[in-house]
View (tube, rainbow, N blue to C red):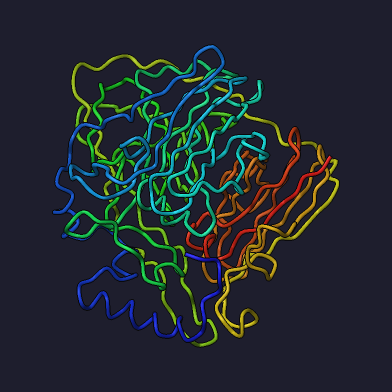
Length: 491
């Protein structure tokens, strides 16, 4: 993929191709945008197996030394496939570090595209061999990362994935992702019997187990795979004892899909978002996660039975009538069953949850600068009338500084979305507090949905680390098509 805008002729032609592809039974944009088809349920091979946890690599003596090899060949949903994996598993190994540790990761690239590594959500240096999105690891090469986790880093749920511009969506869709957990720190004593990672991904496979390539319409809308997996499994079973509390670390590792989570017969008690605690446990009927978001949920079955964890339909908007050319977008299909909670055995007494949690406070109001950032997509104005995915009217240029910020200052950014589709704003290295326009206003995040024709206001402390990094739409096809920009934090 490239970041070049799509020409008007391409867009008009591809609208027809997407529709024709569905009619012919091939992988078209609409088929890839909805629920798993019956064919893909059959192709899953195995469904309803007990949920497995990925392999775990734990730091020792302040260091986590790990080798991550990106290569084809992953077993997904009970099938051997040509999907890509870290160290042969999808998800890759769960990396567990503590505040003050150094993550030393040697990345080997055995796929046929350039790649790199992003530790999504960590507040760490973006320079050199840190969390540097400008690193390129060519096929057959390797790179040694040394990422220093600060001593005061929040304990929580993060993740890692490739971030080489132009190939990010392809590589995550193909299976390159893993959980990254920070242990210790100000972590309250939660009364949990099980601590589980649930990394949700989606993919489309053909009958031979090959990853399907999206057409241009799917890229413009943001692809959604036909097969939705949890830890690489199709509709796994999570076992529990009535009354016992489980901690579910849910990671939305999908390229474009928004998860709207509900658990049949239960409310979900959310204790953290994007790796940091909320001010207090919050009981919710539904938890919405944009691509890249994480939520830590406490689940306590009240009685024996089977309860479906589902993602309800979520309308991300559509391409709209851009220049009168088209009206298409992701379908809001029926609910998807992600997993099933099976509770059995003798009920146990439930311990009380803490009344308060160690949420980071909103930075004080001494704001040094206010900026407006505009996400847009549409026809005309770029590349002789082509369709463009832009931030502030420009597509991504890694050599250009789009924002220059003074180190150790606090800024407020208003992110405006002028398009008819939702976009998910993500800033590397420096997490932010959402002040308006989100259900969790006032909570520290690193991804936030910006609604179609809407806006959000963020307070961002650019503290601790100087250097260049990026902000972008975490609907990753949109990022690869140019909806990304740079920020340079200078001492």
